[in-house]
Amino acid sequence: MPFGRREVVGLIISVLENTDVPVAKLKDVLAVRTQIPPLEESWLALCQFAADYYQRPLGEVALPGLPKNLRTAKTTAIDRALKKLEKAAPAHDATPTARPTLNTAQQQAVDSIVAAKGYTPILLYGVTGSGKTEVYLQAAAQTLASSDAEDHGAQILILVPEINLTPQLEENVRARFPGVSVATLHSGLAEGERLAHWMAAHTGRARIVLGTRLAILASLPNLKLIVIDEEHDPSYKQQEGLRYSARDLAVWRAHQLNIPIVLGSATPSLETWQHAQSSRYRMLELRTRAVPDAVLPKVRVIDMERDKPTEGLTFNLITAVKARLEKGEQSLLFLNRRGYAPVIACDACGWVSNCSRCTAFMVLHKLDRRLRCHHCGLEHAIPKGCPTCGNVDIQPLGRGTQRVEEGLQQHFPGARILRIDADSTRRKGSAQAAFDSVHRGEVDILIGTQMVAKGHDFRNLTLVGILNPDTALFSHDYRASERLFAQLMQVAGRAGRIAQKEAGNPSEVLIQTRYPQHPLYAAVVAHDYDRYAMSLLSERQQAALPPFLYQALLRAEAPELQTALDFLHTASSCIEHPGITMNDPIPMTMTRVANIDRAQLLVESTSRPALQAFLKSWMAALRASKTRVRWSLEVDPLDI
Image 1 (tube, one colour):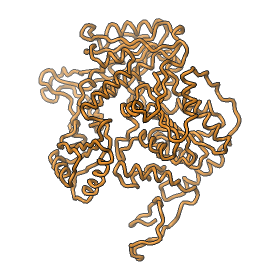
Image 2: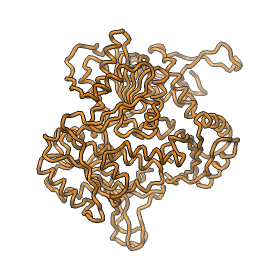
Image 3: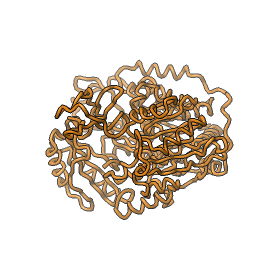
Image 4: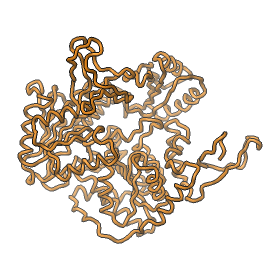
């Protein structure tokens, strides 16, 4: 339709018989997309709920949920996608991969999921390696079979937290369901691919849809089952633009459609755990590993005050890696910090490599011979001497994955070492190629960040070493300990996934720390999520924090910090707020990013409906105000 001097594509959500707009101001629609079926009312209802709950205009939810090529004035891409669908090979009979025999707990879980009627939120709580994916696949198979018998053509949506987990899952699904159309939806797809896969889902041709968080906004007219794998993962929360939780929207969508939803995790989020404890969610448990004779790895804490590290590695860890090399087994060293070193510094004058545009250090990337800010992208060549005093003896402080890789090459010159992080997997397909090489046994020692911590089934990996986890123990964020515990349990779960009798050594996890007596590490050693989660819930309840409190965060950005703070002070008093706790505006922890200062205002309430009612009035008042400050609201914030 014409919009000013442009022609734009919009979404028709209703047609009115009457309007108060003068007829002379009405404009005719130029063309309507009639090539594809209209969007379902249930899809529009999902978008409307998200818009209302996250306090955003409907268009900001609905339009980004559609492929970009569907929102262009030209119809070429749509016509091409439709032809591709028409030419797609019909479902055919083929021999699927053999279904593994389920253990008793797995079979009970599948039976419970398939038997669920109507809206049934289910927490599938299973230790790492317990076969949660196999439960998903067999429950999906039975759901599809029962719907085919009733001629309903059911669709199943399976979400994973990160793009690099989709190829492995897609491979498993296609092998198990060779006669079933499968679509994938994530931001890594080219626009043409995304449109084709979206169209397959929208027309009902795709029976199984796999994807990351954006797939929750896909049009699925026959959706009968939703699965959220690794439901605890913070990646399900969009952190830019529309700040929505795909997990929470999935639960709402299941409720709206009156269908079951399965949330799987070895370390459930405290919100989900609380729902299970209060019987709001049904909990199914997988307490043992799926492979017979496979056991959880032994976790050992290494006191770095006694075992002093060399090049970041303690004697105990070096000895353990050497033993794995001699047996032909694989080791994983986990360090959630990429680059060579987090900072370079001058001992003479105290200069450190601060970013000139952010409240952050510039990270040393030795291989590229660059200093790089991971927040704004600013890069510099490594200085030959201290910019302040001229001292040429400037040194890296701390360790990133590149420096650990260098140290390992010195300790084990003959080992096949591979580093997997955001720097080494920039090219499309490089991450999957790297993981494939690990699975083929072409790697002896794997170094990685959180990319390797979850979802991957490394069959010959018997040792995990965890480096420098202590920083999270002193974070200002009250969720830090929950995230660290989940991260440690997830990465520890990469070890010991084969039968114990097949392994040359008992599988082991070594955690290097300066605080070996910390209760968090004791819980990891005992593989005791239950007790640790209950203790965290008790702390949260006493401190009046989520999930026993509901929050929203108003952020403001301006060239000067005081301008942002002044806006937030004005915002805090622009309307009455009985029953709402309005905290003082404060600078954000990362105060300056790309020469823009940032501040925040936290709003809290013990009642979600009361908070939502306040936010609706508050947003109306703020949108009506005039300001040059850039501001945004996040409901249920994860980072405060």
